[in-house]
Length: 283
Image (cartoon, rainbow, N blue to C red; front, side, top):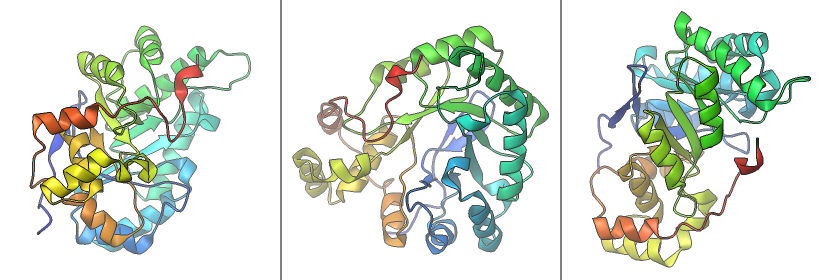
């Protein structure tokens, strides 16, 4: 099958449109130069999701330069690590990320985590101060869209009360075992796009009997079933891989549609487990 020319996009309240499928990076073996070049050149991936924490922004900038893909055709997301929270630190960290990536602006900049360790300030106060920096970067055009990651409803409610711009996107762990529908519904009601990471639950979901049955039924791989399910639920989805063949496989999810009963079957696998951070104890 040929890779689709364009992936569908989801409109953000910033007025920009984010590709619904991207390529995620990570700090645990999450960067391969050749794989990223393959994604950009051969798979038409235009959405790259990284973070300062991952330590690969400069490498990604080099790959983008080598790929020949125009900057205006790319969607680049990176994230602000809590060690850089606070107004001045956050502002400088954003500019440093731009420099490492070799870009003049970011398509999306996220606060990576709701917990804040700023002496003399509560997490809520620290989040508000940091978000104010992101708002100003947004107003300046350095960040075309701004958002958060791993924020729960109470974190978002506090931010709404303290700040002017409602986050354009909230990126949270999302896979068949971790489907926080109450949070998804809240984001939908408040015009916050929901982004999901770890769509394959770090591989844990790929051997589940329901997923294996549907993979056989649709003539697809278990990974393709999970990614298609996530996209069909309206989630901006960013599977990670350092293997060219896996990246290509993960992109081939637009030529079939899961039936409603099959979506329901996968929805029913939710058991609340996390395969990464659990932000529920962050005040």
